[in-house]
Image (cartoon, rainbow, N blue to C red; front, side, top):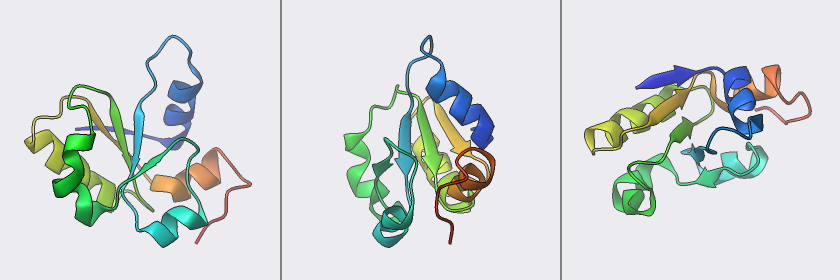
Amino acid sequence: MEHMTAPQLADWIADPSRPKPVLLDVREPWEFQTCHIEGSLPIPMNTIPARQEELDPEAPIVCICHHGARSMQVAAFLERSGFTQVTNLTGGVHAWARQVDGAMPTY
C-alpha cells in the first residue's frame, strides 16, 4: 500500500495530467457531514465489504478517515481483495485541514 501526505494529494488533485483518484472517505456519516475533501465518496468502513463492488479495482483509490488509521485498514482490505492502486492518506482529513485547507472544520 502506498501512503501520501495531504499536500501530495492536493498536488495530485490539481494536476490535470494525472487521472483523478477516487477519494474514498471511510468515516461515519456524522464525520463526513462535519467536514470532507470535496469530491469524496462516503462509504463508511463497516460497509466496505458489502459495497466494494461499487469501486473499480483498477482505479486509483485514496482511502481517507480522520487521522489515517481506519483508512489504512480499509486500504489493506482492498489490496487483499485485488485492488491494485490503493493509497492511504496519512493524517486523514485532520492533516488536510491543517496543511491544505485551513478553512475546513476540525473535530
